[in-house]
Length: 233
Image 1 (tube, rainbow, N blue to C red):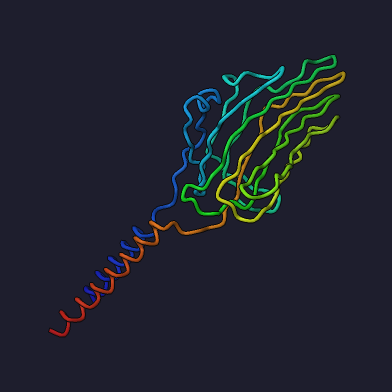
Image 2 (image 1 turned 90 degrees about the horizontal axis):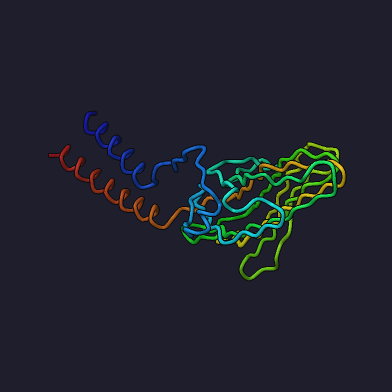
């Protein structure tokens, strides 16, 4: 019995090592958009995905050093799927009491860390307070070998109700994104401060994990034969 218990303990340990531990995500991590673009660092956002910020242009909006990216984050889309992503936070606001508008655009790439085509969904959610205007966030997705896709989220006039939106597509390993942030008011004001962005993935085992699992199982069979020979002896 002791040998059997030892065998099961070793088996559990090898399987845990082969499949790997769940990804650890520290909450409320923040960075300035200007720093991310300058550093050119790919950030792990969970789910086997990474994001690289490449560009920012703004007319009457906040400068890049006044826009904060908050991650990692998990969002639930309208269809109930889990999205791995980040928040864009800044004062994308119009001036109260007159005709006012601003337009900003953020460019970035989302890609699979392993290179496997696992990205299947994109999700965007704009949170704004609107009085006499409209806030719109429009994402243009560029997927290699496919036509561009456009979708977005808006908060209409006289409404503070967010309108999340999502789009599904065949699995891909990378997506180029241009996020256009447009805020307009005629007589009131619009305060757009948070944009949540997420991406869904389908589970695909990484080659390295599968190789470790194979090695672990091979070791298990060897140990089992050794225990049997010892018992017979």
